[in-house]
Length: 169
Image (cartoon, rainbow, N blue to C red):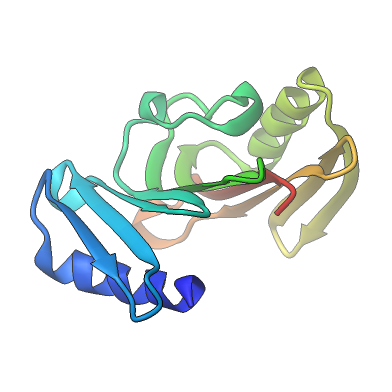
């Protein structure tokens, strides 16, 4: 029930909570979810349950985003969204979407080096139209995926990046 209850609590929270508020919700089965907002409209929502926690945010400075395995966020990136989750069983993951200056080739080169420096091996590389993707693995259940696609319109000359990383997820 908690898996269904959390999205409902998030939707309610986003429409009703202000900056710094913490609200606790309990369903009919006794499951509780504590939801805290930070930073106002462009801030972060933190969700805590008995099974783990999650944070969702956007419009953060690159220096404010902490990735698993101390992987770097590209310098001068504009973070458009950021989510992370940690389970009580030790599994964790993060997803970061960002806009960066430079080409998809530069982005992929940056993250290939960053991944291999942290002990990941590149398992797959793919080019789709003008976008690039890599998938990397470390150990039995740790992995990451990076997708880099040229931006269009007013953002032409930049690259839209999605980074997903985690273990046991």
